[in-house]
Length: 255
Image (cartoon, rainbow, N blue to C red; front, side, top):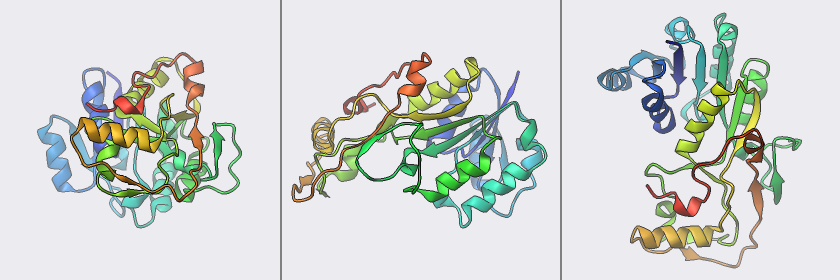
């Protein structure tokens, strides 16, 4: 059985582990010993890996598939951490490396953004620099839109709060579609950069009103004094290769 190492076993990574545990031997990286105990109690092999603690890189990088899913906000020096990973001798021996990036690397200006868009000024330079650092090593980079589903409901975050750009359209992707994209990329031997974003883009007002109504939450206060910017993240590249989003409409991301 091939080995899948997941670096960043949080909301997305841990669900990926549960989904694939019958198909791969799973190794998880834990930020501390408490998280390690939780992983072990769930039946997974787990090893502590964090800034300044790299002792377990040998065992974690001894795998066929590597899934890197660390948000920059969790690190004091994110780029140094990514560099330490990529410079390890075993890193180049991994069969396929996935790096979870973010669609926030695209400019915040209005427009439709796909993988061919030139990025002269990234809105999220840490992710963008990490992508460049991993270029040539990470075979698959997923630029994920706002990760939702599985209990994450956008409307909950804005219930009874002011929303200044209610007419702007959202860019979301369901957790399970990210996991399905990983499986699709392995099965079809894909390489490259792929946006992951649901095909439909309702406005914030449409989405939040609907979800708050469904969850019996107080509606946000929509302030229309600010001009809405239409910024669409296009996730068609993977679809053109045969992938189908299971969750096409963020309005329905209520599990």
